[in-house]
Image (cartoon, rainbow, N blue to C red):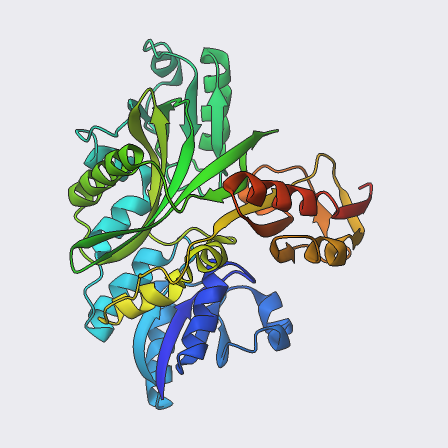
Length: 405
C-alpha cells in the first residue's frame, strides 16, 4: 500500500494532525521516533500504522529504515517532517527518493537563523544584526558600540528557547557566555530588538504561487522569557495592512528562493514597516492547524502534503469565523497532583476545543520556552473581541494543583 513516512512527531498539535490527515486520506503511516515513551504508549497512536524506534534520527538510520520498509512491500510516496530539526532532511530525502520538488535549499536557510539573516540582509524587512563567532574575543565584541536593547539567540533555537533580551553590555556578556557553554562551537546571533505588534503568517507556496493561508496576531507575555499566550486569527484584515504584508512576505519568499514549500513567518509591524523576526520551514506547531480549520475549514497540514505529493492544494475558505486561542502558563514549580475545570471550560459559550498537556505526576515550571505552555482553549465569537473573551474566560476555569518540588 501507498505509505507516508513521518520523521518525528509531537503527541499533539500540527505534526500529529498531519499523521491523522494522512491516515484519513488512506495512506499507511509509518512514524520514525526517537521517543521511547511513544513505543510504551503505542495504543495512544491509533493513526500510526507502524511505529519504529530509532535512538537517533540520523540520515543513515532513516535510509536504512526506508530500504527495510521497501523490502516489506511499502510503496513510499512521501517522506515528511513537521518537527524541528528534521524538516529539511525529510524534504531532501523526499526529493531524492520520491521524485518531489520541495525547496530544500530554502528550508536549510530557514533552519539556520544566521543563514536567514545573511540571505535577507538587503531585504527591507531585515533588522540590524551581528554575529559572535566562537573564536571572537568577547571583550572586543561587546565593546563594538551596539545599541541596546538587543536580542541574543542561538541560530537554531526554537520555541523561544535560547533567546534572550539584553539591556546592556553586562547582560549581553552573560548570555553569550551561557549560550557558548551550551553550544561551544556555535555562532551566536545578535539582533536589534523590534517593538511592535507581532503576527504569524502561514504560507504555502505551490509551483511558485504564493498563498497566504492565515494571518494570526500574537499576544506575548513576558515572565522569564517572551512566551506567546494568545493567537487571534484575523479573517478580514484592513486592505492596506494586508497589501503591505503580502508585499513584504512576497519579497522574503523570492529572496529565499521558495518555489514549493510550506512555511510560517513571525513578523512585526515597527513604525509602519514590516520586520522579520524569523521564518520556519513548516506550519506553526501547537494548535495552529486546528485554529485554521476552525476559522476557514482548511486543514493546512493536509493541503501541505497534497502539495508535496504534486497535487493542487485546496486553500479555498469554506467559511470564515473569528477564532482566538489562549494558552495557560504557570508562575510556580511543582509536581502535578490534579487538573480541574476542563469539563466546565468545554461547555462554555464559543469554546471549540480544550487541550490539557501534562499528566498527573508531571513536573511543571514557569515557561522558559513554548514547551512550558500547559493547556489551551480555542474559542470563536461574533467578533474578534468576543472570541478572545470566550477563550480567556474558559481558560480561567482550568486549575493545576501542584505539589512543591
